[in-house]
Length: 170
Image (cartoon, rainbow, N blue to C red; front, side):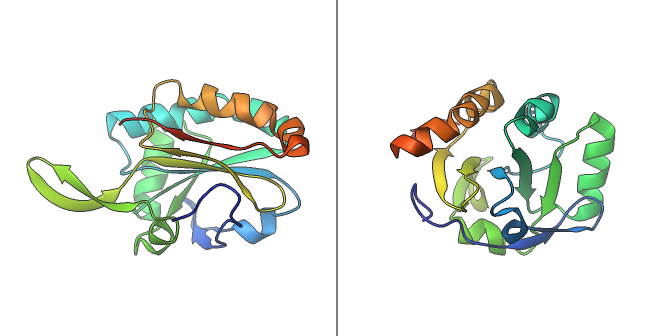
């Protein structure tokens, strides 16, 4: 399980335009909000992606990019992005390899049956590639604002060496 203080596992995944996103290339350049979500076009996932997109410019002012990851394919991501006017980068993890690396591929109760799926989770990774905050079982409403507050304070927090794990019930 990826915890606060760990070096973020590196990965490369295609986005909605089938361009490769490489986490290693962001190290030293940007803070990264890496959020995992179950599926495109569900109410919670749409709310979360739209909220992050609406605040993307604010994140950028603090040298931070936001990327979402789900097992949906690139074409589905492109349709989702275009249908809802999303600007955050959506990455496709069809084989769930990255979801497993970050330990967000979990058994879930869906319609009375136990199935594997993505646990809605957000990681804040600093410019050095260190996981600074973890939100598990995220509730989409207000989540982007909560994450943004931490990004704003990331540099001063980094100087003091403080990090926290946040737990939310989905």
